[in-house]
Image (cartoon, rainbow, N blue to C red; front, side):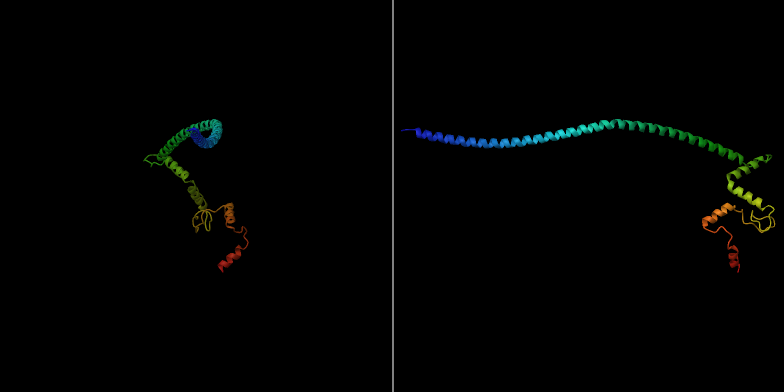
Length: 205
């Protein structure tokens, strides 16, 4: 019995199986190649991204290195300003202390001057007290003095002072013309005497 045809058939089957296996392996290799290519592209993108990030980091480092001297300069200015502020605070404290001391001395002097007279003391202290009071209230005292001076010897319709002896009383200290003029200008009144008599006659009649 000849076994060659059987062997040939077996060999053909083996060859067919190996061919199928090789085809599967080729397909798998192709898939692996595609995946490998995709991985390479992804790796390339990552490398590019890393390079971009490195460039950005290098640029930021350059900016930081440029800003560092400016920051140091600003810190020095802040320290100098703080030193000046401390000096000003010390000077202000000293000025406050001097002011307090001057106020205390002035208060002591005022208490001494305004102290009541004892029996046997001269009247000079009372005159000093009066002058001190005049200085403390200059405006009111000077107005009172002007009114009294204007009222002395003025009788009848005295416009100055609070009325002389025998007079019916004045209207206080007369205003100066420039002050009166300013007041009338502010109120928008006419500065001339035109029409005053007519207005008076209307009021009377």
